[in-house]
Length: 359
Ligand SMILES: [Zn+2]
Image (cartoon, rainbow, N blue to C red; front, side, top):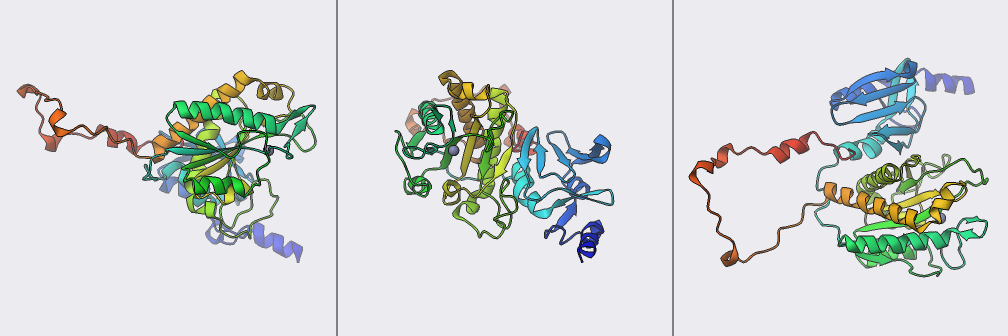
């Protein structure tokens, strides 16, 4: 029976790929061509690249990690290889790739004004421990630094805790919802479960798509129903992507990727919500940086940059300040510079046409 089942899984032709892994799969090259991307193989057929002037996607056979314009993004299902054809789950195109490449500009009609920061752990919950250092100390220190920088950039900031107190997990997104926050950012630092000390770099989580299992859940959770957070999951993904990209590029650290999880603090948030693991307290070099205020300042700067990039992509530009008509300066136009409005070109619109959200 097992042999027959294996044969059924591996002998499916692309044309009959539906049902593979319990998912509908499509040939990657066909999707890429239809999306205006050119495809070619690398590494003797282990890797496929889909690219055009502004986009470069890299997929590895059997892998759940794809590269989107230089940043790792976790897929919900592994890329499959069938008779030399690389297949991708339709769900991953819909929930991991398309939102990063084609989410409509200004998808959020409201400007971001209020950001809720959630310093992980606190009080009796210390978080990770390495020697005499507790994660809760550094998540709070980072949150206070980030609050100051975001306020300087003109945002209102709410904190789920501003001292060493214990806050129940569901109370954290509940506060953001009650106060009408536009973004929710939970801050953590990582540790390997075994204390293995060679893993380093940030990773950024957003909500898992409905019907998929979380990145590190080892197959669990696929039957979890829709959560509040799934209503804005495309924007959460874009926020996670821009945050991860800014952290990796600004801090020049290894990229642990954009990942998916149904963490309690993420799933009940009604606004785009992410959880950042800023680095590993088990790594001998990275932990020293985490304990250093100057490095946390740099990290906060990278986070502000990530939020501003996201804002530019999803929020409409601010309205110009209202000037009473009677106070408007009179602009005299010399006859030689008059233009026929019917012939005025729209360079901005043209420039935007070929630009993707993940650049
Ligand atoms: Zn934590």
